[in-house]
Length: 227
Image 1 (spheres, helix red, strand yellow):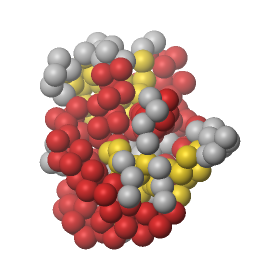
Image 2 (tube, one colour):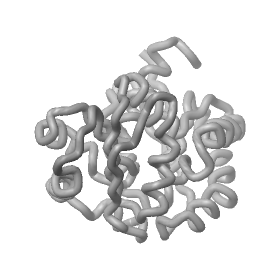
Image 3 (cartoon, helix red, strand yellow):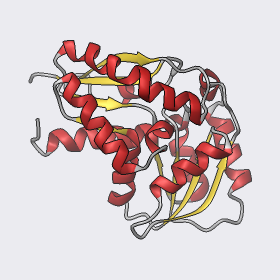
Image 4 (cartoon, helix red, strand yellow):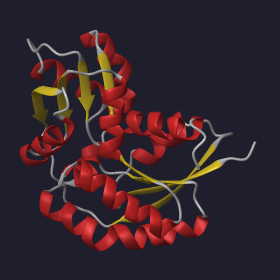
């Protein structure tokens, strides 16, 4: 069986997403090929600059591996201008790379749809602005964000600092008393995939993360027979 090449674009200071995809995707079916988009601060201004200045050159470069699918690996940046923009922008990145493309924000939306999520609690490592941006992008269409909390981290490499246990503790403290059917934990550079099982045990509900949503959508893409 030939392996599918996944072209992954991540912020330059992201240390988590590659590892999660390598761990979660079967190695006999997929290979991951990463290019990086310069980003130091996790703010609206810095992520807008990443989109405008660094994403397209990275997509063009990683296209030289002749990928089968490109993933834009930044949930908060993908949410800044809404899901329609994320979809069209990622399509343009795919054209540069010579393949279809998937944005993490739209992957999260699709995973929430698949889970039939209606009342969603949102946890992020971000500041209030980006937490609100993700919540706005993922709400609507019968979905409601009933609680949203961020850790307030704005140094992008530090998004990976909270341990899975600390993520569970933060969620437990902030969501005490909240009623929701799905917990979404945003950020590709957050160790929430590792915390997923414990979060599900803690809240007794479905838990989706940015990286789990991407994994789900990658596998669905190729299971559908699309190229």
